Length: 109
Image 1 (cartoon, rainbow, N blue to C red):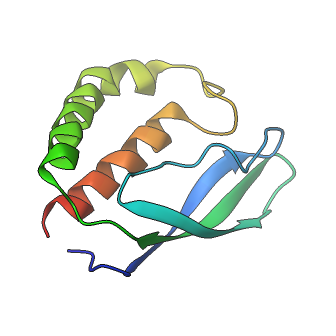
Image 2 (cartoon, rainbow, N blue to C red; image 1 turned 180 degrees about the vertical axis):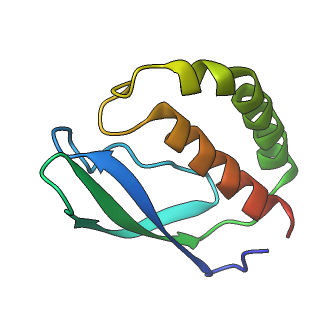
């Protein structure tokens, strides 16, 4: 779906009290180009992420995606029932969801 050199742009919510720079989802086919924080309140902000596809999707990455999908399914209920401040900088569910969407986006080349 995403062509080589194609860009994926999305907002990523964070808590202002934590370090924004170190907690973004990662994928072996993608490279973060730029992040830009928007601060709508003193407690929360959102970061606009611009990510570019730098590597083709391989069978090895596909296998890793299957494992991540399974982990997401198994942990979905656990993550949604956790207290709001679950990890530094962001909600664990949001991280898992972003990773899942990235894997889905890349697996259909």
